Image (cartoon, rainbow, N blue to C red):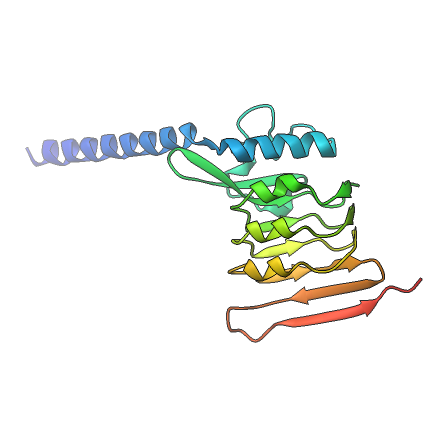
Length: 197
């Protein structure tokens, strides 16, 4: 009789575990990228000539595959990472590194307000860093080094609540490298150097 009780308890526990796993998988499967962010991502893809891939899915649900798995953003290029609730996903990481992007800093990025990590380094972006960069208030890591940005550093960078690293702004004849740590570790620094002509 004891054997039957423990077997039925084990069966019930296994069934509950399976049901819970199914519900978690189903809720993740139903989550989709915020429509405004989906439009922005598709527009960026078209503007930059980036075709769909496992880490930059624009032909299906963008927040699927490597965008929601445990791989690191640095493992793929171009790539996005998403954070999802039961119904909605938001792009939190974007990496388009050394892909010969050109033109001005794209306004579509201003619609990705959940970004915490943006790496557009080693491209050919030109013009000023726009004020809408301040819309990205959750930004922690912003890397724009080795581009040809010009103009002044916008005051709106001050709206970043949890910035940890701003790296490599090249403004015509000046390179500014910020490493900022607002978490009290005392590791903040700023370097300013002229570009030799």
